[in-house]
Image (cartoon, rainbow, N blue to C red; front, side, top):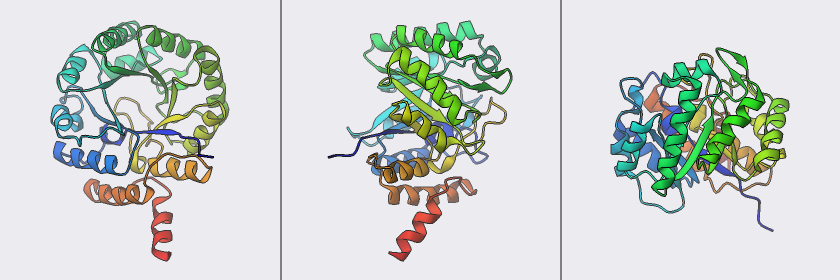
Length: 302
């Protein structure tokens, strides 16, 4: 009997690198992405078509799209903050686009300088345009559990935003614990409500490890039938517009945990660990994944 598959979407090249002190040039980010493709990541978010004046680390998105390895077994996605970003992404050949409405007024103002209503309207317009262009679409609900400015988020607001995204053509809804404030109980509760409303097939989880609960939160979501998660090489991450947002769930940690639990991800952990070590040298900083050192010792001993 084959193991059940869990889809891991690597967000390191975008979410992981957007807030680092060391900014990697587009050709270095492209090299990282192609290494991740060779490590059999099922999905990779490779860029954000945002104004580089606001997020300098994301400069060169079109260059990256043009230099990707040509493969069929990896879903390549990009983030678009507004209609202009979407038009640039479409022109660059993007096939999967993501929008990121936040669940609170203040977070939307800080993140993309729009009100909550404006953000929802803009996201819906982008999704409609994307579907008209036969593109696959993903819609995040950022700060789905807690906002750094407004505190705990009402789950009904999250469900309402998710519903509007789906009605506008979103193929997938990603509940994002942007500042790492969720815990297994709150994850179980929100996903249970969303699964009841939308079914589990179109839902995904995005967890940060601020309070060291990202892996536990994945387990809670797994128990609610969720089989797709964002993660980030080396636990990189943190949102420049969300105070308190620490690194993402580390890809090598969640892949290792899933493998040991009997799930399949197709990810080559040895290659992934080599990428972590290389990225540490480029960023001049230790990365946050917890299992790379263990795997390195294990491989040396075998």
